[in-house]
Amino acid sequence: MVLGMLAHGPATSYDLKQRVGLTIGNFWAFAHSQLYDEPARLAEAGLLTVTEEEGGRRKRTYSITDEGHHALQEWLAAPTPDETEVRDLGLLKLFFATFAGPGDLAHLADTRRASHKSRADGYQALYSQIAEHADRWQVKSLELGIRIERTVERFWTEFIEELEADARKPPRSDS
Image (tube, rainbow, N blue to C red):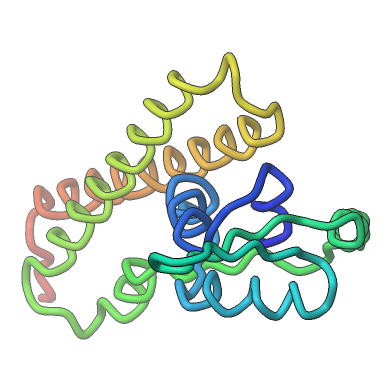
């Protein structure tokens, strides 16, 4: 991740944090400490160079080396057989909903639908801003993010409709 972000241009660790937060931070979870520790490690390995400010806060600006570009290209060329990992708290709560209280399921569905709609709307707004001038592959990753969020939003919308239909059914009589 660090090599890929620095392939776009030199940056301090703080700059990296900002770049990641606005881009891949939307779909790749990371510890912010990585953006402070990892560049130093990569510099020791010869994949980055470091320029340190003289005086002031002595900020370090990192730049990718030819070896760093080569390592990035090797990583990009390596197979990616891993399955997509889903860590969705709403899905986990749905799985255990048998033990939820009255109204909890409807509340969960409402909040998850709203959350995914908001995220999809945000991605769509970003897409409208950058689609014409951004890197083609970054735009494609954003398109996938929009599709995923809209699909999950649609799931929760349909689930809400299912809950509402269940609520309209007359109670079963077990006679």
